[in-house]
Length: 285
Ligand SMILES: *[C@@H]1O[C@H](CO)[C@@H](O)[C@H](O)[C@H]1NC(C)=O
Ligand SMILES: *[C@@H]1O[C@H](CO)[C@@H](O)[C@H](O)[C@H]1NC(C)=O
Ligand SMILES: *[C@@H]1O[C@H](CO)[C@@H](O)[C@H](O)[C@H]1NC(C)=O
Ligand SMILES: *[C@@H]1O[C@H](CO)[C@@H](O)[C@H](O)[C@H]1NC(C)=O
Ligand SMILES: *[C@@H]1O[C@H](CO)[C@@H](O)[C@H](O)[C@H]1NC(C)=O
Ligand SMILES: *[C@@H]1O[C@H](CO)[C@@H](O)[C@H](O)[C@H]1NC(C)=O
Ligand SMILES: *[C@@H]1O[C@H](CO)[C@@H](O)[C@H](O)[C@H]1NC(C)=O
Ligand SMILES: *[C@@H]1O[C@H](CO)[C@@H](O)[C@H](O)[C@H]1NC(C)=O
Ligand SMILES: *[C@@H]1O[C@H](CO)[C@@H](O)[C@H](O)[C@H]1NC(C)=O
Ligand SMILES: *[C@@H]1O[C@H](CO)[C@@H](O)[C@H](O)[C@H]1NC(C)=O
Image 1 (cartoon, rainbow, N blue to C red):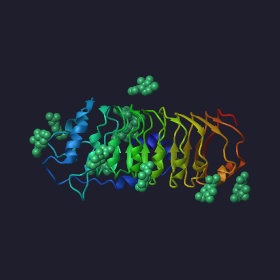
Image 2: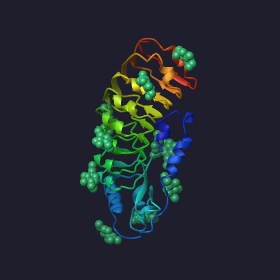
Image 3: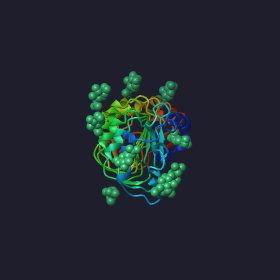
Image 4: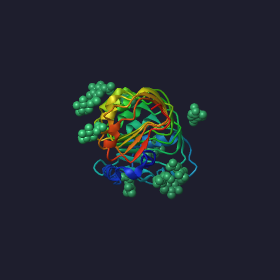
């Protein structure tokens, strides 16, 4: 999946964690062989909104086989016929993501990365309450990130490389299961919400290449499990906390380059003994 690509540098971070999460997603075929279940209908709705399928990937999405065996689809072992995985990465699909995807309420893993999907991220995704991995990276998605997604208990959320605009929803403080977020390379503006610092388990925070401004919330520099903080190429300002290196004992990657940070480079950085990559370039330090 694209998450590992965009949450670079992947060599430094927890592949084992991802494996663990994938495993939970289940991979059994369902035993319901015929019938128009909700999940089948919502997959067909999804397909209907795909305007181009140059590789013919969705040709297998027909009635000759059970929909649980369609390309990219896995169903639950314990709840036959309920879709748990939809993985359609790298297929050059064009079209939009239909709200009907919200009916896939057993979905744990949604990866539509690296296609040409346009339009908005549907609010209805908020109904996929079991999602743990949500990867919509590398498409051409537009408009705001729906605040309703804050109801999701996702561990990994990757919306990088899209055309998203607006602010980062402060409601994300409700996503207490969030371990990794990438919103890199969009057109997001406004400040980094204070609330993002309230997610104590956060491991990766990747917000580079947006139009974010203002100060980085102090609490974000106080997430003791944080491995990677990448906010390069924004318009962020303010000083770094003098004890940053003591507050972030796990930090491996700190990329603050090409912003408007000022003041001193804190001595305490020397105490972040796991730090392997540091970019403070093009600021006013
Ligand atoms: C989906 O099922 C296939 C075939 O059983 C399996 O190879 C794949 O790992 C499963 N995908 C996920 C994400 O669990
Ligand atoms: C499912 O519905 C479609 C149209 O919505 C219909 O063509 C098809 O025959 C139905 N299949 C079953 C098994 O009921
Ligand atoms: C329907 O899907 C099957 C299985 O993937 C495939 O072999 C077949 O060509 C598809 N039929 C059509 C009409 O595309
Ligand atoms: C998608 O492309 C990336 C980069 O080329 C690759 O690492 C990944 O394995 C691909 N995924 C699939 C399902 O082919
Ligand atoms: C995107 O998918 C294409 C195949 O459609 C693949 O060649 C390319 O490496 C993928 N890019 C990324 C960034 O995964
Ligand atoms: C979620 O599901 C409920 C009940 O099925 C529905 O009323 C609601 O509109 C859905 N929410 C979204 C955002 O689609
Ligand atoms: C994405 O945004 C860029 C810059 O605003 C624009 O040039 C491009 O056409 C947009 N792409 C899509 C698919 O909307
Ligand atoms: C956050 O979650 C709580 C409890 O689940 C809920 O009552 C509250 O409305 C949520 N707030 C937002 C902004 O989503
Ligand atoms: C950092 O977190 C610790 C423990 O959660 C708290 O006691 C401390 O006041 C915080 N410091 C800052 C600068 O936010
Ligand atoms: C580095 O850590 C040591 C031990 O915890 C502490 O005594 C020292 O003050 C720290 N240095 C800085 C510059 O914060």
